[in-house]
Image (cartoon, rainbow, N blue to C red):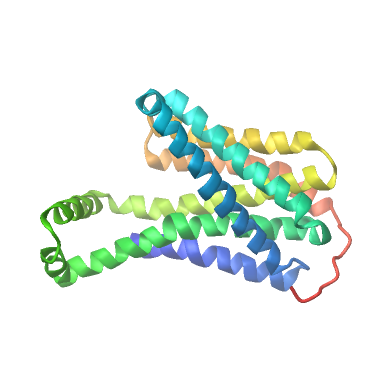
Length: 259
């Protein structure tokens, strides 16, 4: 349960703190975070999710049964949809406020909503279930279910109980790395839009696809802890390249209209 609480804090509180700090210390607008969150929901959850359902319906086990093919497909889909979403949103919806600070705010919104929806809500559900089990209230709830639903729920609870505590801590840490990745990629796509350099958008797609595919493939041969170390190294390398550019750039301030 401590691991669940920690993952909740890391996946929910950290994006909110970053959003507040950016708003307080820069000219970034909260609407940029909203654009980032909306881009993730539309392009990753809805459009990419629709593609996944279509591909699984058509190819089924031929796709999921080959880990190399599945990792490549999943990485490319995530990279194309999310980085294209960033590009289109920044190019057509954020013209008046597009600068480096708002690009970072966009990344916080994009990665933050993903962390909240993927880990935060799941962690909250797991924590509630754990509290019910420990208090004895779960048995009463299960008894009110029909046999099929009860069996399914008991299997889910058994899987939850069998999950090592460390995995809950790791899920929160992984979201921090993913958030850092989304912020860096948002800045990269901003440079693609602002400088008229589509090659940087292609680079963002390639980085996103490569990291996602690598994580899936590495999970087959090394422990989750080592996968997180590799993810940290990859994200750190990306920031080693991004940070000097971010520090050197001095975009013209955007007039604050209160948004």
